[in-house]
Length: 82
Image (tube, rainbow, N blue to C red):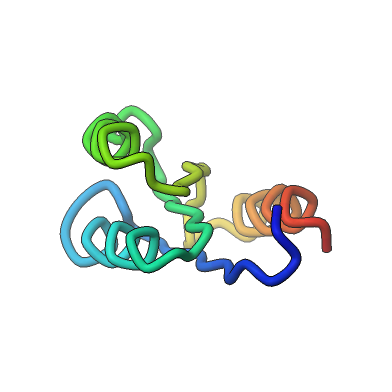
């Protein structure tokens, strides 16, 4: 990852506002972590990211589960080098 690249983490990206927000951030140059509870619903965002060559990384995250939050944050931080 470029040391000056901005990073965004967006929840609820399988549809709606979260989905559109993650696409807008990625299109603006952010390395975007699109998170969702159910990864089976990730095909739509994966398809757009591939088609447009967007820097979107999909991670599982359930914001109501402390362990899920901890795991997602640790995975993202290790990927971005923090």
